[in-house]
Image (cartoon, rainbow, N blue to C red; front, side):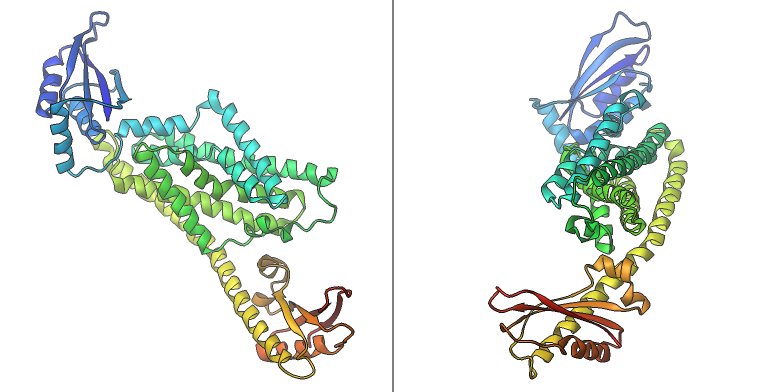
Length: 451
């Protein structure tokens, strides 16, 4: 429910009241004696869906944009006429969305103006620093905490809202804040990660690509695209329905803050491939969020206030959507490559396990038990560091087996290497690790380079 108060311009009283009567709106009017430009203030309750069409009627009756129009959230309104108006709105295809004016205000409030940006800058920097801590500690809880405080939903929604309702200042502000926010997140993360590294707050020689929380953001695939599109759709819907945007803001931050922090970590550690993978993920996510929000807002029915500019805005929206979609298509080549490598990795691992089990069924290896078989150190290592599956280079295979105490199998790695090379047609490097079955003996390993 909404409670609306509108200033009635001088000479327009009869037209305004006639428009409200025609819409069957229950109103109260008070004379205005202090302002010669406005002769009265009219107040009336409305269902949420009826606000926009009613305000359009009043503009047609002579209420200009410079008149005071205040829309308040009303908890309870008791009126038979309001009930009838609500029923009429239901029959007229109720959409459950807020008015265009409310949408503009909500988006503008989420995208701070220049004088208010210190809090946006501070919260973005803090969220990126907290994300670095969570990523390096492999703490999902800390990473989630960084998402909660990230203020990134506002700029994305402001850019899309400004585009569909023809508010160029709002759209420009939203785009600018997104660039500032993501750039600040990367720089803050890089500076803090460099301090952590060189001060020695984590063990020297730590391989950041072996940390699971970082690994998951180094090789984005098409599932990452689905997450970002979902975040954009959810953000637009939450804004248009007047629902709280806090939880949806967390989802948008999920798509932006951790990968941006990973870019900074890669820069601090001097690993450009880490920054490349996570950087692509950031770009894919921010483009997907903006594209999804644009489409959802337009489909829901938001249009410019000036009907004469409708075609121009439609053309602008189509152009921006094409640019975003084209950029996503280009980046999708990277996503497709990672998705393909991930699929190949999974297939190769399954084939490796089958070959190892088949070999353990033969003499003299029946006393061995397979504990683990893996390729490289991670999927990211395959995709970026080793690239064996893609380029035909050597593929590292590590096999860990349980053996009886005191036994020795010096030819195991060599035979497995030949077997995998023959069955897969790939150049394989096998590392076999033996662990005593009793769990007390030392771990021994043998390495062999594939032929």
